[in-house]
Amino acid sequence: MTNSYLCVYCWRVIPIENLFCELVSSPESTWLDPPKVAGTSKRIRVRDWRPLPQWRRWLGETPADPFESSDPNKPRLYCKCGEPISPVAKVRSDQSLAIRIAGAQNSGKTFFIATILDSLRQMRPVPIAAWGIGDTDTRFKEISDALLVQGQRLNTTRKQFGERYAWAIVEGEGMARSKPYPLLAVHDMAGEDWKNLGRDCPDAIKRYLGLHGDLILILDGATIADDLGLDPKDAWDEQPRPGDSGAMDLTILGHIRDLWGSRQIYKKVKLALVITKADLLWGRYPKEGDNVGAFVETHQQDQSMLENLLIDSKRGDLLVIANRFLDYRIFATSSLGFFPKQCDIINNKLRRKPRPSGTILPLLWLLGIELDGSSQETG
Ligand SMILES: Nc1nc2c(ncn2[C@@H]2O[C@H](COP(=O)(O)OP(=O)(O)O)[C@@H](O)[C@H]2O)c(=O)[nH]1
Ligand SMILES: [Mg+2]
Ligand SMILES: [Zn+2]
Image (tube, rainbow, N blue to C red; front, side, top):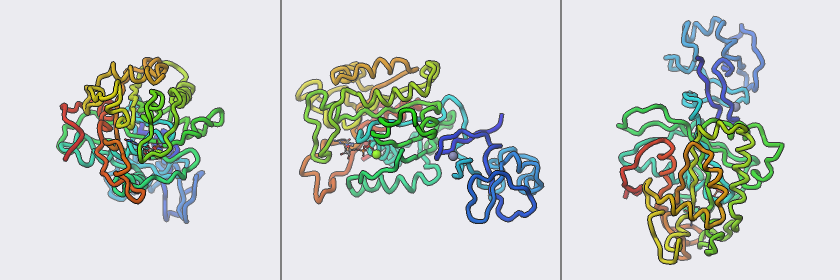
């Protein structure tokens, strides 16, 4: 079987033969169909490159996959979309290629991802590590630092049809090597984009949603609070999205259903329903003064209470859809770990350091990693 790689720019899964190689200063070969010619270099498909003398000169008879060459100057390979392919984006098992994250605008996705990555860097012992693929780390660090270090609000400018990020998940230092983990793949799209997807759904998004793998659906704790009749405002988020009884979440799941077509896929995929901003509910749900089992920081979050929370906030339909999946679990998380009050904000910056609560649990659950009852906090 030939190796395939995931392009984290256009979400194509491509067999190695169809990737392109950059040959910088070799005059004699015939150049085929280069997708994008950067500078003076030319690109040739791996399958057309293999019969050429350079192949043997550079790589020997084998390997069939240039990434597996022992030569430290491995060639760079490119997708037909023109973007570079990373050797770590190798597709290992079709079923769990990538864990995807989806959610409405302002639901807390960016905060959630930033705190997961930050927790992974700080956890001891660390069960897994995440390596940014391509320029993911460079681009995401800027956002993450603004949020977690500077306490800034994110500016809301956005690219049409979103930003893409991808991380390779590897076992943590000293951890036993288990089966390879799927990638964490994020196509961060704004709410309007979800609404407008319709028939003109860009191919990259179709491919992203069509990738085989588990799904993390982010449910906005503020809209849930609003639907429960609780004041969803905190001092930091001045304009939370009003309650919609989960309509936007159903829109997102609807697009996924349309793209998956057959029901077969559901039975291979796990779904994590992640309620963000749970700090808005602490001490207020199920009743005033309650601060109970659903909000603990281990896998033992009280599922029946969280199901009731979804039903009480008119999201029962989500549970019906969740039942189609191989397995599902609900998580109540807070990326901030506290309810922001006016005194936490100075000069329009959040001055209290986030102490994420429970945000790491969905990923660990999807990867089948047990937390030994200890919390995410690492002091
Ligand atoms: N109270 C509270 N608010 C949060 C939390 N996480 C995110 N928010 C608020 O939600 C807003 C949107 O979060 P963001 O991650 O940018 O949402 P995205 O559009 O889904 O990426 C933030 O500016 C915060 O005000 C949390 O854990 N607790
Ligand atoms: Mg965002
Ligand atoms: Zn591509």
